[in-house]
Image 1 (cartoon, helix red, strand yellow):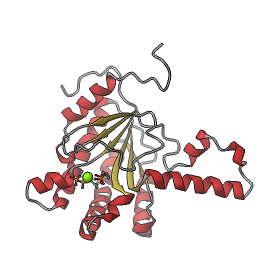
Image 2: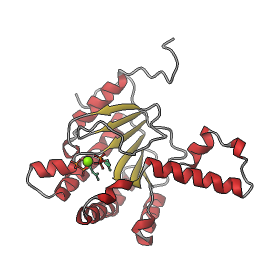
Image 3: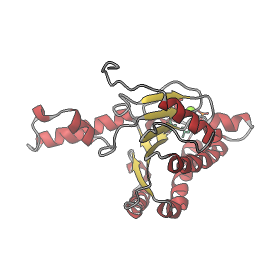
Length: 240
Ligand code: IPE
Ligand code: IPE
Ligand code: MG
């Protein structure tokens, strides 16, 4: 099944990579073991995007609400995330992947912010795949930050409140310049958005599957692409 031609490939795929903890617990392993396996799945799916013609991949890696987990899991996850970024930087550069990180990085300190910016800069001229990683990201945080940016412009006299429209809000979001996702996949069997891209998912096709993220394979990804290809996207219009 892998590698076959698909009639319509989504330009932008977003993924809620869920199920790492349960995958590990079922194997009587600590949850961080599942997160480590999850990084392997992530590499696999980045490759699949190149192979199947997906142009933008946005991944939910750590939510604004994930701070509520036990401190050991939170710190383990963050260490894994940023060390993987450092370890993968060269291969992103050589594989034509452009990196962008969205979310509130301030709590991680200036060293992490600096490392992320350097990697973004190093990959800025790559065009094969745009990889967007959402870290300490929440859809509500994104909308609130956008409101604040616009309010500052209004207060400074650089924007009239009447000029605020969907476009100016979208441009003030952390995903500005990116088109909205066409397809959002959530693994792990939960049927919810969990505060991911609330504004951006308005007309996205939502695909939920039971597979736990560490086991999400190329065939599972192709299954989601095939399902997407059967969708009729109407955006409020009629079929005609
Ligand atoms: C998703 O897996 C990864 C993150 C939230 C960072 P989980 O850790 O939520 O795994 P489950 O849902 O508990 O199995
Ligand atoms: C969503 O998964 C966040 C990420 C995948 C990063 P969660 O596991 O945190 O979501 P809930 O708590 O089940 O809604
Ligand atoms: Mg989960």
